[in-house]
Image (tube, helix red, strand yellow):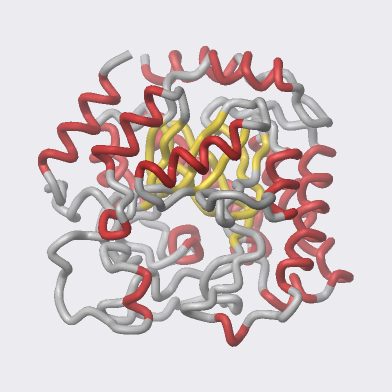
Amino acid sequence: MVLTGMLLVGAASAAARDRQWTPEEAWDWYRAQPWLTGANFVPESAINQIEMWQADTFDPATIDRDLGYAAGVGFNCMRVFLHDLVWEVDPEAYYARIDTYLDIASRHGIRTMFVFFDAVWDPHPKLGTQKAPTPGVHNSGWVQGPHTEVLSDESRHASVKPYVQGILKRYGQDPRVLMWDLYNEPGNTNGNSYGRLEPENKHALCRIFLERVFAWARETAPGQPLTAGAWMGLARTGGDLDPLDAYMLEQSDIVTFHTYDNLEGAKRAVARVKAAGRPMICTEYMARTAGSRFEEIMPYFKAENIGAIHWGLVSGKSQTIYPWESWQKPFDSEPEVWFHDVFRPDGTPFSAEEAALIRSLNATP
């Protein structure tokens, strides 16, 4: 019954398009969806997207358990990061694991926004055994994609085109897939973590690379919308948008954005992205000790008909219960107030009140 309903919802996105969707097409698609709520998802047993997807560490049992917690509070979508290095090893085997994940998610009534590339954290991803978490440090093992050597050499950008188009040709009409996020936070120079390892012209390189990814993706004419999320300084007052943010808003079929600000900052961010005239989904929010909390932000997004995808589902090897500043001062014990994440591995919520609020908002049409 869940799958049938998802197929009907997916039918609204079935028309393949090799161009940007018009605002009218975008709104038609968005109105056919439920209110989209969920989390950025990596299973508790994986430190990063490579460990999530590699053959030796792919963990369907934990994925099923964790997505069960999500379904229990009414979440209906997850934002999930892929990685080009895993695809390069064996595309067909990777597709089999993606299918397993999508089948599990579908059984829980959850659709997926896949992310192709990520400009944040370690710029030197490697296959094989991933490092153990650094005690007390937020996201100590997350990796970028593509590798910085690929990003830094424009002549090598096309080396990942087969990955993008292979995934899209395989899943571009799949109703289990909600939409495609092409590049997470392009231009992010990781100043508080790996900044010393980043190319000086990263911002410009990311713009060139993203333009190419949009072109490669549209060549495959997927039935789902494409996006890349604005994230730089959206909450500030005055001034123009960063040109890279402006480009992402101009090119996306459905507008996505990030805000880890408090309610007033989130409202300023929404005012900036709303000017694009398209449906909006916030694909990263909720950092408790930074002032971005479920009890303020999630009801606001619902009132404004903005999709709400926060960071972090189950506390695990990603260690995002610790704040960003743990890179400078690691924690020696669990923080009293978690930064991200909703559940412990046994399914107990960090806050029963939060979980009840999420369940109530998701249950109300």
